[in-house]
Image (cartoon, rainbow, N blue to C red; front, side, top):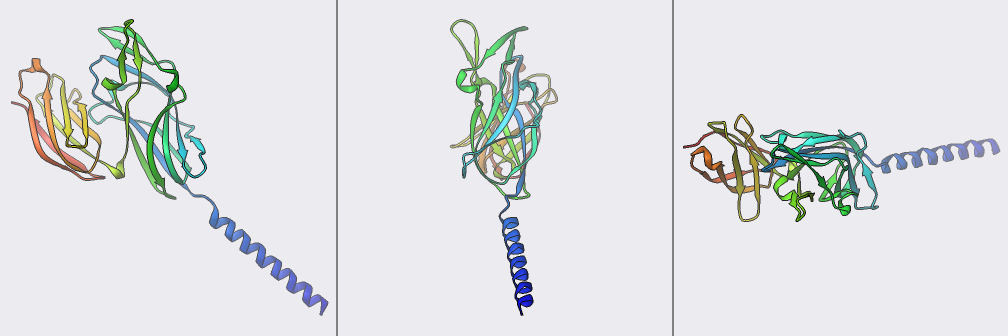
Length: 260
């Protein structure tokens, strides 16, 4: 009888252990794949170099911050990131959960080139811990999230009274699932053309590249007026396209646009 009781006790203890193990496994936090890319909005300079050192995300539930770690550290010329070109800064697995903020951490090797002369871009001390971008996105287990950081060069460069230049980054953060894009090709080529999509809530701009190609990233769902504005010396007229519909997660292709 005592042997039977002991055996029963062992089975109960083993069952309890397995049950606890199952509960622990069910409470384990999953992971999500986070891809962060950087592109450029318009800027009327020869080169703007930014020194990217890290990307950090902040979680709402425990205030923890996670560095994406193995990112593509380097100095990037923002003016090469036009016409739909972007650079992937990070593609990493991170804990699932609600992230409220993303920080783009820059180094000290930032510079600008104007009329062939290079000037250092000073960064305010408040920015050295990383430029804070509010994202408020819930990362679900096993899902890929693509974030695009759209660097607005013209708004980010401040000319100082002493002739120097200050870098105060202005960046829009968007996700592929929560925004769309507008693409097209402006012809003829050989000069710079500014493309702007606007409505009552948003204004998104980009220059065409050398082939006349443009992509407006991170355009929220809605109906827009798209303005094609070639540089004045080209002699071509401004083109305005009304009622351009953008749908989240999709590309609105305008095709080839011939200036007159």
